[in-house]
Image (tube, rainbow, N blue to C red; front, side):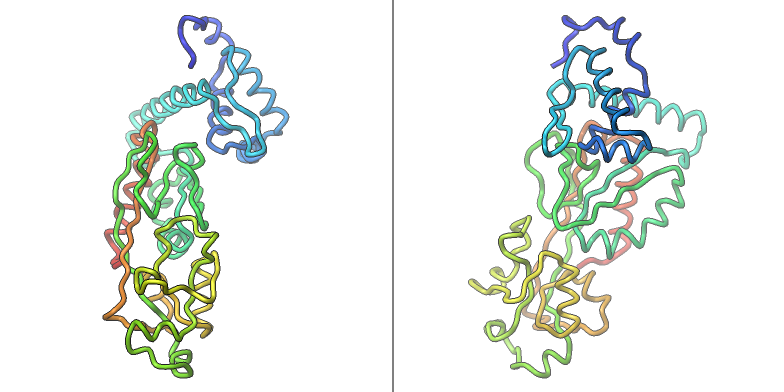
Length: 307
């Protein structure tokens, strides 16, 4: 930890400038020098030199260099908190001077599930960006989550409530999953009149050893020991498999209900309920750009029935 006892604050003030701190902030948030350089449109060698200059001025190592990228040291994590505080003040001053909410600026990296990001958030982002044209959003919609604790993302919408880390966590919404198949599939296979009949069907689901959250294991809740025979790591691929008549898939209703070729199977017998949890690091939770995105997400799910 960086302490006043071993730091000459006047020498730091003379040696450190905001540009170096901005570079540090970008590298810390992306954990990768090349990614930060691409974002800032600077040469990676230049960024590396600026980071070393900052470390020299402070008198401490800020990043551990590894195969996974640039990982913050304890001092680096401390400095990140300080710089984010400066960023918040600068942003607040800009808003106060302009007197306009539209002056919210900066980048927010949002980590969400593949389906929620593609089906719900992406089509609605135009409204957020219209309200805040100076805001930049990085929507990371993948099978898996970036870590808010490790500053890989600013905000994460997760499948279970995080229990560790300095996070502010709230439930975003509940959503439902049901069984879906095409009329053609059901026509050419054995009738499905009850849950036990599912054992005679081709069920579509996740590749078990690639599941990134235990909350994605649905079938065992429907009937003990029930498992998919056709699998994919991608939920959107599972939807396509169902749409093409390959089998019966357990899909979020907000995904499947958009597909006219899919119809419910055992609609009254099988419903699985899950929740989306919103997590943000407590150090940046009150930043204007973060609040703008959280408000957008909250209003978005309130305007749609995901259940």
